[in-house]
Length: 299
Image 1 (cartoon, helix red, strand yellow):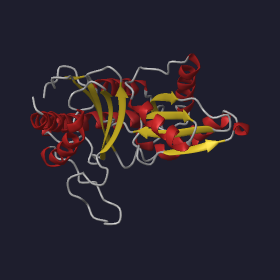
Image 2 (cartoon, one colour):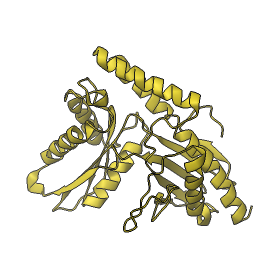
Image 3 (cartoon, rainbow, N blue to C red):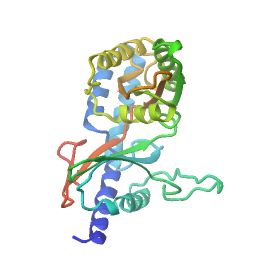
């Protein structure tokens, strides 16, 4: 298969995958929402959750995106150093985004700075956004496609503290961020916390955190304990679905970390809404593919 054929095939597959991912929640998120609904004691909260599920079912029935804000397309990739079609990936994702805007359809959300006009197809300056990690020796390309909505993950935040502020500053910052963002971000949320050495590194780690599959934990026992403690504490804030009083402001808290400088403690916080539209697809070196987010689904 030459590069032109590979680009065409990847574009076609990714257009279909984006269309699916805009309308159907990943299996782990859907199952966790059902768990959260069952744990609520408020009748009003149960009504809201039932409305969520009705909306999700209608999206599939009517073949429409499950949220009117289909966001900006972000692609987080783990690309093997031996994957033979790396050169066509960027253009294929650009073209798939533009085509999916009309075939899904996706709301036209992308505005270029300095021109102040909507581009009309969700592509633009450095958009869709691509994040690359290279995996030595692998011949696969794993893509996480994420619909980054304007009310949840895009207003994320990050800050650098000094060691004299102590690790307690991290906890307070996470609580303040979730309490501020949670009202407008359509809880229950998936909270991503990045612990790093500077603002941009912590922010990226917080993104990687909330894209992790639900049920996974930080590899360090203390990191896992921090996730559990933050989740328990945040869910005592009394914020529920749609910002109305309830038992669950968060479905999960995920922490990702890197080593830090002796003089800095950096924390980033990003939250994902209940309509956590992220999908994982893996292309092999012959461009066959596996879909990890949706069981029993073919494109």
